[in-house]
Length: 300
Image 1 (cartoon, rainbow, N blue to C red):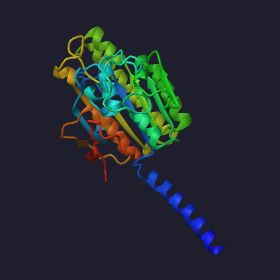
Image 2 (tube, rainbow, N blue to C red; image 1 turned 135 degrees about the vertical axis):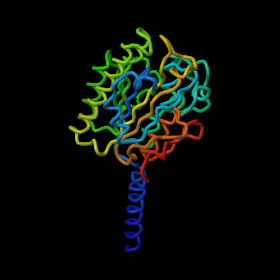
Image 3 (cartoon, rainbow, N blue to C red; image 1 turned 45 degrees about the horizontal axis):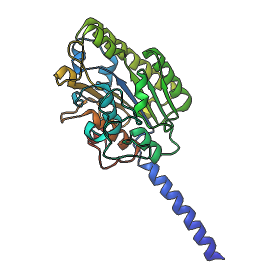
Image 4 (cartoon, helix red, strand yellow; image 1 turned 180 degrees about the horizontal axis):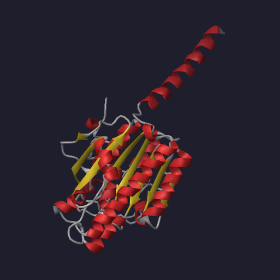
């Protein structure tokens, strides 16, 4: 009888140890990604951005990250959230849906699409709280259905910010992804070096301040990594080409375990986002991705 009891106890301890070691791989409890559609790095030359400047001062950053070709929203956001380039994930236009895809992805998840950071987080951390909030309603087409606790569109940057902040307050999510679209709207209507564009960037910067304040009020600011990224910039009144104003975007990382005032000197691509988030949450993505985690941005 003693031997049987010993074996059972050993099995329980062994299982518990495996569970703990899996969680121990996580670098931080919370990740917040704020995506500003249409924010080219040239915007920092013409707009006042005190909150993003503060993130750069207290974190790791580059204003020389590159988007994908074509420099359009659907292909670019898909590259960000999958970690793969267009020829791999197959999202070549803003109108892509999983039912009407023209080019099959080189690798599929159970959801008939290239896996995103949301689906992969759900797979590796089944109990994770995940939320996406997007100003552009088509953004939801690029996410596996049903993997997020909340995946919600909003008609303005204000609504999206309010919804996401309420979610952070109430749920303390492991991963929150926010997309705001008004900067790109301003670029299309007024030009991507116009006063209207600069004003829209300053508005986006003020919303980042709202998020930072809400994280502090929620008591998780010190345990969170905040990442600010963009899908593309713009040239004159459009985007989709390879002009530097279209291709060069910011990539800012700040928060727990992030180096302070660290300028990332090596090449950075927007598809480095998903593997970086996976690194923070303690797992690796599939072997078909194009990006790499920006490990040098963090304190070992």
